[in-house]
Length: 444
Ligand code: UGA
Image 1 (cartoon, rainbow, N blue to C red):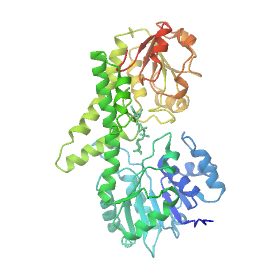
Image 2: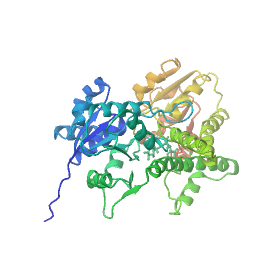
Image 3: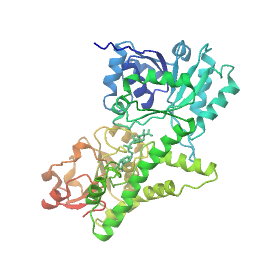
């Protein structure tokens, strides 16, 4: 019989947003004793009641279980959380600044609070999970040196996260790679212990230079964003020459060198990561006296894809005095995150041109109402078909599963029998067979 040695240790996670909570809950479930810290006392109060302040599948359940087992605690007090801690994960926000560089204010505040709250005798590893520009770990170490006499005991390492919103818990529990940027042998050993439950045989942990780990994060997101923009550009050529983007995707995706993921053409990418990380990467090039033609192009194509779709809409329907139905508000399915959501941009643009827009999203209505409260002709529905008979056309903006096989008899109530599929998600043939007009992207 194999007896598993549980390598449990005390860990602090700073920042109880979506990365911090997923990290904290999953590490606690793996047997570690985790303290999640956040400056917002209201957030800590609700987290103590196991209330997650945003929609992320599976997170609520895993968080409640970890809390019930006593492995996961929430606090605003750095000193209690950091007492005898072996590792700290920094998961604070690094929102974009005007220049495109991520804002490091929260990171600096967290480092300051850490330095004021612990007097380590042994090395404490500080893993930066927040997405930062290349060079940020070195900057953090220098910053710490300025403010703390313990800078030789508090050692930074880069540990980028690869969590997709909507699937973050599964991504954490079943990673394809764990990247640790450090040259410190103690931290390497510690990392192996922390991630033991999530590692494989052979190990999927890759130890790299700090700068490489930072750049792996940016390059991964920029590469995925580029794949999407490439397909979006191909979709425009498909429209021009009569090819079908679904067929192109299947044909290209069958080549394992290309891979069949992240090839979906549509309205383009949104969210808090791809747009921001492309900008961060571009700034890294600039700071190094270089130019990034590919990242710039991916950004440019993405910025123009909504306009391309709006042209399609305008060439099929007279917008003045029309009433539209929009399905989907979030930047992608399985999240209520509206940051950089293309759907929100679409609604804002169209609301100036039409009479009314009815909108429906399975989980983002509350956030949507807040964000669009100043648009008086945007009306929030209780369910996806409500008011459909009063609408001229439907626009699908986010590919939530519940939109995939719509009730045809209900769609036939649309005055113009017109469906714009911004995510190439619907069964176009079925709609056309049923006398609906279908407009996708890169296909007829
Ligand atoms: C992305 C990465 O996928 C994660 O690996 C990374 O950890 C995360 O950023 C981050 O940096 O924190 P996320 O932004 O949650 O994750 O969402 P994705 O699933 O990557 O989708 C991003 C955008 O691309 C969405 O707007 C989505 O609709 C769009 N997309 C995705 C497409 O337009 N086509 C595709 O084929 C795939």
